[in-house]
Image (cartoon, rainbow, N blue to C red; front, side):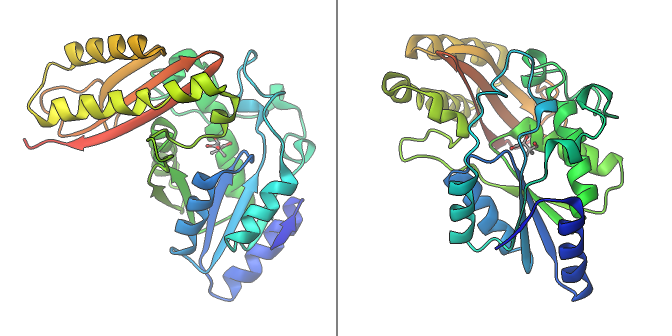
Length: 284
Ligand code: PAF
């Protein structure tokens, strides 16, 4: 696997592949890779000849009181994992090349309305940090396609909207949620959980599945369903941030006319914030 540390390196590498007619698939990450990331790479490899993975801990998307300083930097282990799944190149740029004027002076890309709800309500500025870095990475790497996980459902919806609105010539590939055997969605932040919290954590997915089952069984009072789910989370030992039934594409609160629904949840377990979601299509 090639390791490219500068814009010049990765651009020259990708340009050569594209000149040879190869399709380049991009998997952006924050590093601290787990099996879920490796599945994104494997999915990417099925969509093109070359897979480029980036590792960049993007300060712009972390709030002031969030875990930017604490976020695990595990480059050596990450390189080994990426080699094991056959990634073609790793792009790990420096902060100074990515943000030459400092993050406070960075021009930003902001998607309106979808970004100040759900996770955006408790993480102001987070999605603008994401869309800004994703735009920059797209411009640096210039891939044909990019893979994003459904685990971060709101991020995926926001990136799809941005890609469409800005006419970016990049196909977005959606990767299914990778889960542990007990259902917990794989996340770098699961590493923050102690043994007691880790045992409680799968209740988030179980509660989502329960809500989906209720909707499949005909429940259309989403407010009631959300309230019940919040109680179930509290009883399980989680502190819900939100539990919400939304229109999958727009992330607006689901109404009677919506058929493609996403049930999204975020909850605190000690100092760790977990998110997860399930989707359901209902007949009109
Ligand atoms: O999902 C992530 O890991 C990050 O938000 C991303 C897309 C790599 C942007 O920094």
